[in-house]
Length: 106
Image (cartoon, rainbow, N blue to C red; front, side):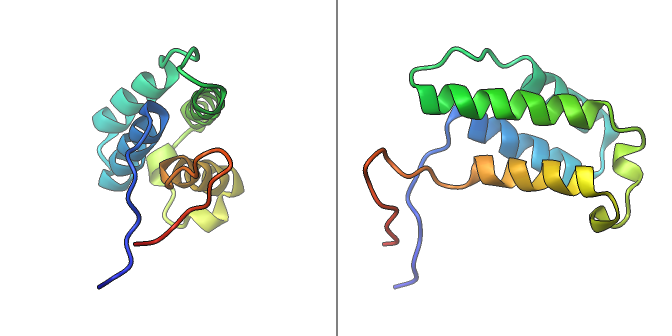
């Protein structure tokens, strides 16, 4: 049986995933919409971990919004700031490890 991670994304994780998908699509209107959604997410959440994730998401979205020609970058490695933003979004999409728990593959 192949290893798989079982998890559900938090709101921050779902918005980060949507933003990554929009960026990959290269559709400027979709990217703009997802940047707006990510920028307007409320910080207040059910736990401190989710609040931190939302704060990070908002900061990444704000940085991406100030980047001129966001979709014109052919090689993200040539733009360290964009590369960092995309890596942070990927981190937000990654499975969460429960407090005091360990991440297990099934």
